[in-house]
Structure formats: C-alpha cells, structure tokens
Image (cartoon, rainbow, N blue to C red; front, side, top):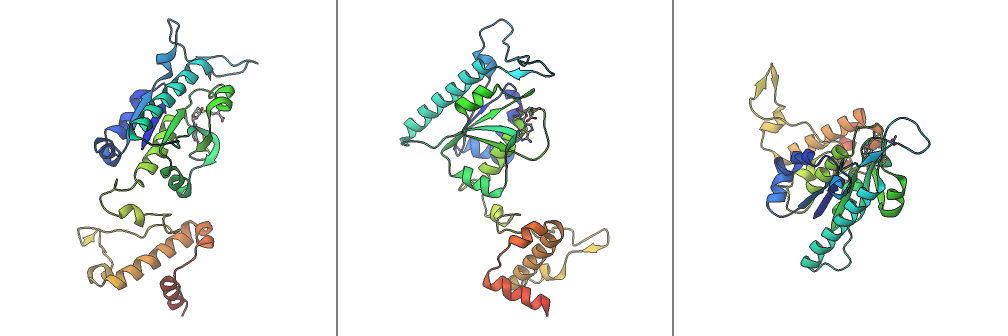
Length: 251
Ligand code: SAM
C-alpha cells in the first residue's frame, strides 16, 4: 500500500516507520511510506506555512499554497508508484484527519484496506485553509470526539490500524481474534506464571480441550461486551454454535 503523509512535523513518523509491525511491513515492502513537508514548498525566507485567520480571532491557519503543492507532489508520487506497478485507475484518496470527520471504527479500517493507497493530510493550529479541503480532500476522518494539537497522531493511528489488517502483514491470524472483528470485545489472555498475586490461570485453559477453550473464550467475550459495550452486544448476531452456547448459559 502506498501511504503519503503531508505534515509539517515529518520527524514524528518514525513512530511507525521505525518500530514494530508497521516498520516490518515497510521493510518487507508491503507498505511504501512517503513523508512530505509543506515547508519544502514555501518560497519565502521564513518558510512560512501558516498565517493569521481572515476575520480575526485567535490561532493560525495553514496556508493553502504550500499545502496544495505538497498534496500535488504526493499525487505525482502516487501516480509514479502506481504506473510502475501497472495499476490502472488507482484508488488513492486524499484523507484529511480532522475532529470534524467521520469517527474511525473497524469497518472504516477495513474499507481503507481496499484502497491502493492513501494521502493523509495532517493539520496543525486552527486547521487548514478551507479551500484546500474543497479542492483536494476526498474524505475526512476523526479518531474521536476530542481535539489534538495536530493530525500526525491521528494519521498514524489510521495508518497503523490499516497496515495491521493488510494481507500477510501479521505473521499469524491474531489480528482476526481481536476486539471488534467478530462484533465483540476480545476475551482475557494469560501467560506464565501459572499463579500471579494469588490469582491462578483459569483451569479450562490448562486442559488442552480445544472445543471447551473455544466456548469459554466466546462466553468471556460475551460477558465483557455486555458489561463494557452494550451497544455492540445489541448489534451482535451469534453463529449457530454460539447461539447454542448462549442457550446453555440461560438454563
Ligand atoms: N479548529 C479545529 C476544529 O475545532 O475542528 C481543530 C484544529 S486541531 C487543534 C489541529 C489539527 O489536529 C486538525 O487540523 C486535525 O488535522 C488534527 N486533529 C485534532 N483532533 C483530531 C481528531 N480528533 N481526529 C483527527 N484529527 C484531529
């Protein structure tokens, strides 16, 4: 997947390019990351990327000109990348990370996995000049109803959540057992030692009885989801096997 981050703080992205599973995906060539700074497209001595808002008021606004040039550059890189790979009509939207966007969830992450690439626009200050959004942005994504100082962390949250769901990025299928994948929260996990602070690992996990372990894990998922996320539980449709386990519980 082609990923271009347009950001005035390019150094922040080492968090995903140099660490963990995302870094390994980059090394293996499963993800191609480009970080493009609008400052490189300024023409003045101060390399200005922001100015005061028309109409007055506090804060600064990111200038349209360097931002638009950075986005055009990202699009040119994408074109080159997809041409090299022979991908016709690549699906590579420009996404603005914004608290005003649609709230990110697992379904959206999976939809993003279908893109050939993404150009992720990171705002700072009061945000970007509205005309940049009107001219270039295909969609806006928020990571929640609160405001951060910049779009870099949200862009990395989106990129991380997408990269780990790309085919063959995780070495095992553990990503498929995590919360939200089957509509429920994940079950509890245990490893050595057997006893920690007088708390023993649940017996069933030591039996080696796979069917019983599977059932126990599902019922634990149900317990947690009902308690912590009743909204998810209300929407959950069990499989035949799960419905049978749930009936046994009610008896
Ligand atoms: N004035 C903007 C508003 O109230 O909608 C907030 C600007 S915020 C201080 C600066 C930048 O951080 C935004 O342009 C956006 O890129 C990013 N940002 C902040 N909170 C975010 C969130 N919850 N989700 C995604 N991006 C966010």
